[in-house]
Amino acid sequence: MKDYKYIPSNYFVLTYPGKTIFLAMGETMMMTAWLWPQFPSPTYMGYLATFLTWVGTEYNFYVKWLFLIIMGIHVIETLFAFYYCYKLKLTSLTTLKWTTQVFIVGIISLNYLIKPVTGKRTPEDATKDARFDKKET
Image 1: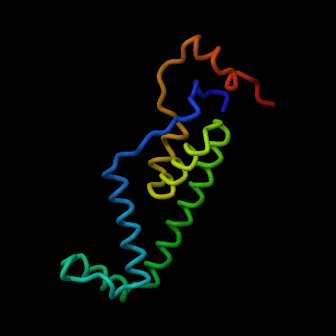
Image 2 (image 1 turned 180 degrees about the vertical axis):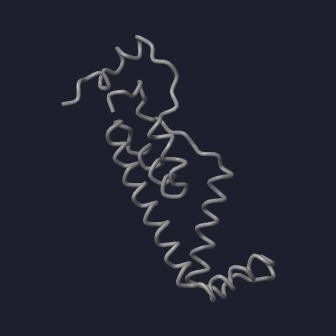
């Protein structure tokens, strides 16, 4: 953590909303195909409902394990996000934002936390917050 530039305690980068919505809908559809394969209505969802019903009934075992593995990976990524927020000394609200976003989006969001998007560090920033200049023991 000592190589990080100055990062404000409210540092948060919102991922592209299109990616967030796409991934959240994908996770929701996978859960629906696993738990309620007959739920999607062809009236509202058309061929997608037919596909989800077919996948949920014919390949329920594989959908279940794929969903559980993906959610397990997202939980682990969320724990990493919580750890990084703690190490960067971010506020509680910012930590909540990061953990929620990482749980939904995954590694795409975690990448912004691991490699922060910041400008060049100025001498004034170094005097404002010296916590990143301390030697780690």
